Image (tube, rainbow, N blue to C red):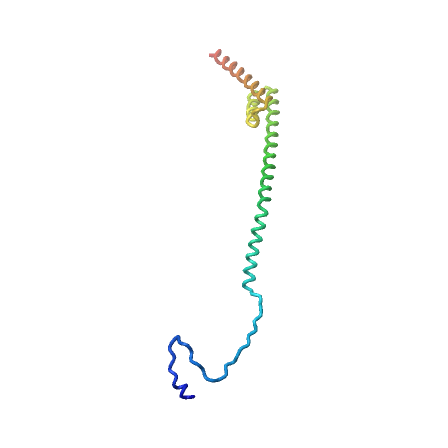
Length: 149
């Protein structure tokens, strides 16, 4: 036996290991059982969370669009109401100025009201009336200046 051990040559690098002595090698009995993997669970949770967020976002987009349309309609209704209030105020103020004899002030009020609603018949008639009065006054004023010269 000693002759066999001493007769072995030195091993080359990266070669197979030599056979050991004749002592008994311990045997290991392994029991395989299914166990929960920590890494795989967190990875799956991330994927599930991502898909849930995508689903929630996809379902809420139509609601956001509808809310923005309703908000736009409310703002538009408010602007129209505000324009009507401004138009009525300017028309009323212009009539009062016209009755008090402040023609140029009435004309400016009617011009502003005309910028809001240009197709109002009563406003157009009042605007023409004030223009006629202003033109007559202007011509009379010009005639008075010519007489003075």
